Image 1 (cartoon, rainbow, N blue to C red):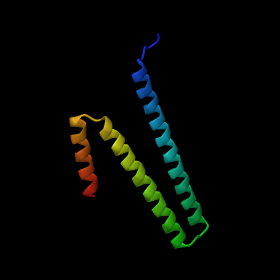
Image 2 (cartoon, one colour):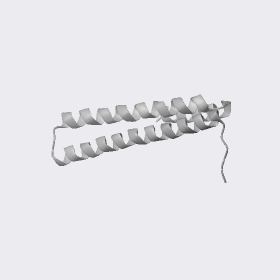
Image 3 (cartoon, rainbow, N blue to C red):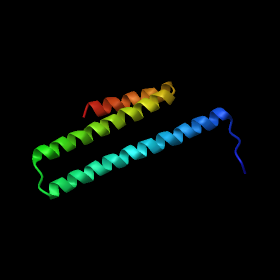
Length: 94
């Protein structure tokens, strides 16, 4: 059975797939950075070097977090935006 999609629906579907792939690629890079830090610890690298790498990881995670929030807000209705605000408030209180 074939599903018929309009041009707009098809473009939206393709954009969503591209967003997912982009997010997965960013997560893989972050994963690689974490493995790199694990290796640095095993090799007894200096604390300064490890701190710099951990800071880069934190920056990458924060950047991805903001990107995901931004995408969600762009597609959200009013009720979903209220849920997101609650989630963000919980995160900021920790």
